Length: 298
Image (cartoon, rainbow, N blue to C red; front, side, top):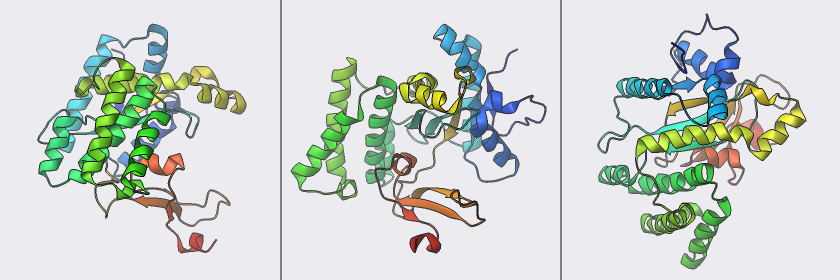
């Protein structure tokens, strides 16, 4: 039977040309898991499914069954449950081609979040985290899946900040974010003609399809043409348990290199933002802190 998914902990030594099937990101996650590093659990959907989807505009039944099996395994490893309102498992969906295309393909974070999960975190005394994550998810999911431009979400946020006399997102309190989310939901329903999907299985399938479709977005096509990357490579998709850099003031998101990417010197180089998620640092819209004291003086 044809396989569409490889878990991060699966041995890939016997796989011919693993980068072709798993993409460079998938290989990296697999290797780090094999080394015993603390990689959030997950699995890689192979590029072969991307090729199938582009041809048929649907997924084969056997993939849907394999996806359900791998979600179940992830639940067992994490001791959480996808769709649970008492012990929720939240996921990220990321692309991963055999050739690096930084920032060209789409990512969706916080899949599995809905109003019931929000209420769960509120009961855990994590209201600010809950509403911030819901706001982020509504924006990112709707932009990537439904192609609602960032402008409309930014306009709502900026208008609210101005009206409330606030300067930055970090100044928002729970009641502020709740009002912004309500406006987001109205916007989304107006644009797609239905309420925002709260069924977690629907969220996951729509996210996988959207990330695969991003292989043929305009910026990705232009990037491949400029860098002479073949269109028929396709992208793998990495499904991974969420880690929350926006959980509290002792949490952060960042990027770190074991060597300086500018000159190749062997010294740690990286950046981070307190109480944020990954897209904040890669988008360039927020100013990060540097990790090394050397970089602070440059």
